[in-house]
Length: 150
Image (cartoon, rainbow, N blue to C red; front, side, top):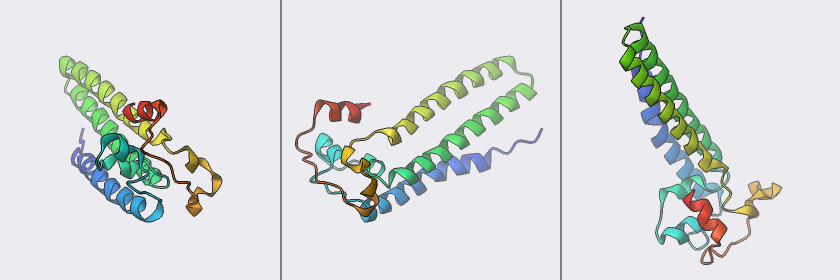
């Protein structure tokens, strides 16, 4: 059984930096991001890289990039499981099952960040035309804080 782990590890390790750069470019060029109106900036009181994944349309390449990372991680885990299974190591196989299950669940939960809607005014069908209303980020509601923290 020949399993090649390196391409999956390479895919996983390069997906995040590429996703971050693409989302950064999209956030600063295709959205109405401003630190004066950004809720994440208001919450933390400073710049946070999460801002790159919060504004539409930057959420789209962000979700795709994180999905690629998730796919590589799950495939890597399944290949590791197959490797241990093929060598007839029961304890290692069980440990790998637990690890792959837990890590896959956590990574799938990370994808949830792209379903949050901190900026409800961006749900308007014309948001691609940048008709985003200015929000008062200095007044975070309890719901905003709950969305940021979850």
